[in-house]
Length: 242
Ligand SMILES: NC(=O)C1=CN([C@@H]2O[C@H](COP(=O)(O)OP(=O)(O)OC[C@H]3O[C@@H](n4cnc5c(N)ncnc54)[C@H](OP(=O)(O)O)[C@@H]3O)[C@@H](O)[C@H]2O)C=CC1
Ligand SMILES: O=C(O)C1=N[C@H](C(=O)O)C[C@H](O)C1
Image (tube, rainbow, N blue to C red; front, side, top):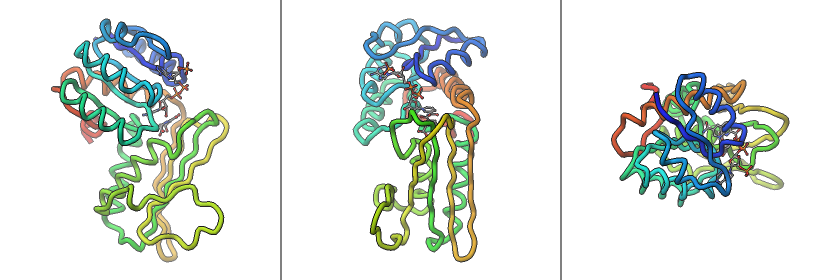
């Protein structure tokens, strides 16, 4: 059993995490939000779970490093500079960053990689996601990780082939593009579909999150796993063994 500290504790995910921590027999070490001293939380935690905001990332990693505790980062909207911060921290502590901690999406990414690798480039790939009206980043972290899975299978860089925000006279679709469309509304916890559109047929691989418990459960499972891990950067595939 472990003391698990939650960063972004007053948010929607923070509340789900607290419930899962307590239900799974761990101790809730406390929470940190904007303006709080995350260093104090790190000192009383065996592991940190961060579902807050990209602006908080460096301070959270620094606090985890100083306390020598592992950290799970579920925050999305991360840019290249944030991934560099994570790589640097992972030299000293165990870190797991993912756009989606659920078992279902971790498996979906495998299926997308498999399909993208087997279908030729004449199969167009479009990724559609829908989230609640409060979500501030687009495309979602999950859509990007699914896009990365498809790009990896096609041996291309997602940055080179990504197309999003189509509007107006766009011209025809770029061959080999991986397209993204983001819908926002209501209270949707997270829906993702990867569409492979070929000549006269389509394959759609989808995942629907019915609530946030699935993300919280995966994050706590990752925190447990990281406690036994050497410093380094890890994935949900490694945690779940799939
Ligand atoms: N990887 C995954 O599986 C999942 C990832 N997410 C991601 O997790 C993040 C949080 O989502 P959600 O809980 O819905 O969002 P909320 O807006 O409900 O909660 C975010 C929380 O983080 C706090 N926060 C903001 N800035 C800072 C900061 N600088 N330092 C510490 N705390 C801060 C907020 O405080 P305040 O309100 O005062 O700003 C708030 O309490 C998002 O990036 C989301 O995309 C969500 C679900 C699953
Ligand atoms: O903000 C959310 O709510 C979610 N964010 C993650 C994302 O950006 O993919 C994961 C999940 O879809 C919910």
